[in-house]
Image (tube, rainbow, N blue to C red; front, side, top):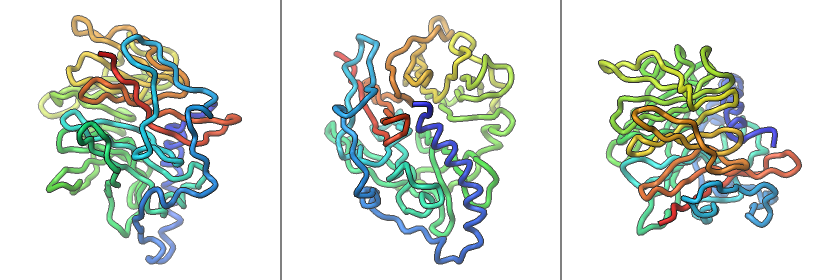
Length: 322
């Protein structure tokens, strides 16, 4: 339990740049990405973790929500489903998937299934997820940390032709995500050390985590306002942040609740008279990256560990009580 899978993913993305450099020397046949059914790439020896096998199940600390349960096999598998995000204006669940957390990054880059997926909710049920392709078929990329705002997706990536981890954006056109382009200058990611982010419904406030100077230690949550189409110098959310690490922010549709990850759990701060208040712990024990659907149900990723080793990750939901 010393590591979280989202930290593991960040390490993967950093390593991805080094792997990409070495792979560029290989012939073009090896660089072609063949897309396949994601479940077909899960090794036969990978055991599907169930709640009954969980040494550290998620624990609810709020009377507003029911006991968390995993989503069914349409979403969760014996592989790792991570980084859930539900868009404001449609019941679409986005998440990151990789078939086997034991696999080194160079194989994930070439397996044809690791990446961002989307599932639509129809008649109250999540449907089979489809991969969102955000690169050319003959280019290598490892994409994650997706955020969808209307017809715009922001995502981070380690990809061929770029140094380190960069932020990109893509437009939803005629049913597909197209026209991806670098968004580092727009988001000022290098200047502000922008980590995973969330933009409010009105498009005027950008929340992100960062270890930039001026915080309270480790990762803090920062907020930047848009003025004349430009993001301004971010401010530290002092009542929310602590010497612990706060990150992976999510703002509710009405803008009055800030959800985030902290201390291997999920926390919530409410806005009172325009100010964010001290946060409360909603779920503990290896839970992170909260997001809510249109009914107020809370979704998050839960990581399974055995003997301090990450086994897999599933997406859970804690339904809001009526």
